[in-house]
Amino acid sequence: MPKFVMLKKDTRARTRAAGTALALAALAAGATTGAGPAAARPAQGPAAAPTAAAECSEAHRIEQKLSTGTTWRMCWRYHKDAGLVLADVSYQPPGETSPIKVLSAARLSQIHVPYDDGQNEYQDLTQAGFAQGLMELKPAECPGGTLKTVKVPNAWDPSRAQVKGLCTTTRSRGHAYRMQGDAANKVFQKQGKDLLVYTVNQTGWYEYITEWRFQDDGTISMNVGATGSLSPFDYDAGDGHGWPLGEGAKDYATSHSHNVFWKLNFALDGSSKGRVEQYDSKVTPPARGGEGPRNTTTRTKVTNELAGDAKNMRWWRVVSATGKNKDGHKRSYEIVPGPSAKYPGRAYTRHDVYFTEYDKCEQFASDNLGACPAGHGRSVDKWVDGQQLKRPVVWVNVGFHHVARDEDQQPMPVHWQGFTLTPRDVTAMNPLTPAELADQNGAPENGS
Ligand SMILES: [Cu+2]
Image (cartoon, rainbow, N blue to C red; front, side, top):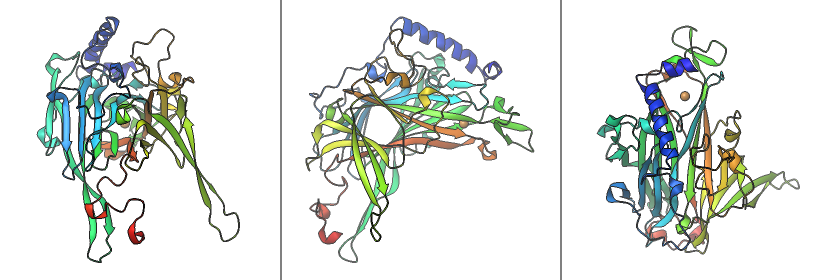
């Protein structure tokens, strides 16, 4: 809605126009910088040494040994449209002699915000200045952590070209495990610790917290939290597409969706040639009276590009092309979708996960800015066209339908959406297993 854009807070509308022109100029010139898109990096072949140190300068390195003994290592960079990019992410739990590479690159690939009344539809990363709106963080909002200074490439606002806006810190998450030992007074328990990496990006009236959580047990969670405030110019939904905020039923905030896309380039054990598998379970009624229902789980190899839909008892995993754990099982990471209000309004938001064959020009899940040849589709749904998956790229779409409520003002409480990557057979046992239980692999004593 033109009215919305023109009345936008302070100079954002103007800045946006200038920035778009700059961005287009850069694209036309084929300009690339050291902070370029993740997929523009050279392929990590299977021969790449998994133990190689992260290839980045000290200022762009994140290395955290958690108090429970697990070390996470990665590099970060900042993309002018995508914002924070994490690269060469590796995990080294206690007992592993070298880091286990997990991802070569991970970042957001779009936040699509369609309004329920059909009057506004935003592509926050590629059109609304998400990355340019990087916010400076106060030490108090990075408790116990470190704030890093981020150079914002092609900064629209010269005074915001260097922003102290990347927080890395640790946080307790409660029980990692608990188990009653054989003796009544013996309890094995551990309190888990996580590394958190986050930025805050202002887009219009919203502020998005992009949070990456790396747990000491190998789990990775990525979430986007929306806070800031509702746009005052949305308070006009008199047509049944909003919710009354404020006294009586005069001011209606228009309902809308936030469809967040992540892009993951896996590199398990240093190889980008991981294999994708889908698992489905089917419960059948008891065959005869007295027997219980049975649940049969089947594996489907995803050999070609796929637009996948989350379903009850369905899950996917990316399996290492080269690495096995000490039990001889192939290492993998499982994709665990979070709750999602899937938005059927656009072809690219109709599926929960996309597996596409690597193509350098495919950068954003919608409104793609990558330098693709003419005729190449502009959104991730178009890129699922039957190619064989040799170097799969994973796109995850999590939607949130935001029907505003009185409590959304003011400020708006953070609402989160995201998903999790869970290690499956990355290590032979629980990576935090205490020494006394280390011999209980495959045959727990006394069934404990
Ligand atoms: Cu919202």
